[in-house]
Image (tube, rainbow, N blue to C red; front, top):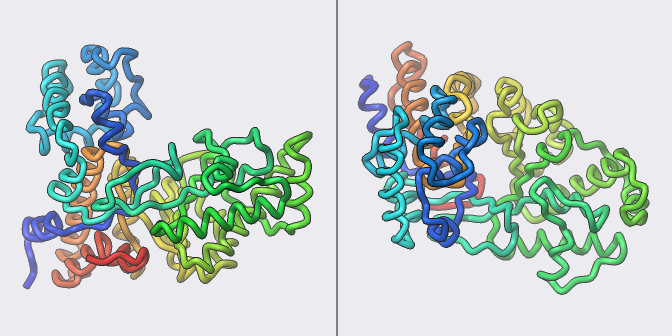
Amino acid sequence: MKLSFEKILEKVLDMHVIDTHEHTYPWEVVSSRNPSIYDIFEGGYVFWIAKPPKNRGDYKGLVESVKEILGSTFYRTCAIAVKDIYGVNIDYPTEEAFIEASRAISEAYRDRYWIRRLFKEKSLIDKALWDPYWNIWGEPFDPEIFKPVLRINTLLFGYSRDARDHNGNSPYIFEKYFGLEVSTFEDYMNLIDTVLEEAKRRGYVALKSALAYDRPLLFENVGEKDAKEVFNKRGKDLTPRDIKVFQDFILRYILSRAAKLDLPVQFHTGLAIIEGSNPINLANIIREYSNINFILFHGGYPWIRETAAMAMSFKNAYIDFCWLPMISPSACRLLLRETIELGLSGKAMWGGDCWAAEATYGALKIFKGILSETLWEMIDKGHLRSDDAIEIASKILYENAAKLFGLSR
């Protein structure tokens, strides 16, 4: 029986979800700020494109700021969440609406389990993969919701004790965590082994690379001897080529360990250092490490077709729609349809990629709407049967990620 769009949407909205990528701030962090609408906007990318007022309580300035970006899906994501969760309409920004929403938000966060409720009850997210890059090892998290992933960026910055990744992290912090002392290159390799093995033991379900914010994604095949020579310079008189050599070797070493530990690797692709973040740059390592599953984030936007081509070309390459519905619903819709047409619906998944749980709710609702529209259009044109469309939706929202990351209902 051919289902109506309304029925498809109803079924998709009722589906539970495995969320593949979040940066959600813990309740302890959010509640300590006396949270307001400002925190929702900050946690939903609004301030990536709008200039925030200097004073968090300047609602008039906040209104003027977001009026500059009307039409942005970042703002729409937050507006959907605030209306559905708190009952306040901010579709068009006003001081009164922002003040009313802020009061409701502040009141809600008196409940220490509010974030859990937003994920599990409001969003129907059973588990979310969590990347706390601001504290890559020590941040507490709610195990009822989150499964941690290990961000590997900092491990590529061991060529100097003064070097930091774009989040300000140094790998030498792990000396303190594990009671190690790094003096030699061999010591540093042992540090990496220890970090990865301990992450696996602690239940981390994947590695995450945000290296596209630090450097281009093309990693060449470099010998250990060359990397060791760079390390032995102790950060002195290093050239850009020296740093690249060291990082290229370390990334490949991490991948060799990931293969043995059976850890999938998530890669930020697209918007970052724009000239080096095309997912095509990863073709050589995806081909070389065929025993590792690579997940290409954000649909590689703006290179969405390149991402689809990578997933079609390599059995171990997957498409992740995280963040893409918030960047551009139009691009998300195009990539989703082509993903299905290419027979790749078993290799696709979704994540929110937000700091605020409310923004995650809004991002998921937008994606479920896009997914429903796309599937119904394909049903209407005779490209899919209704039952097949529902199965595809379930795979993308839940089953694919559950299988890939070893999660169960």
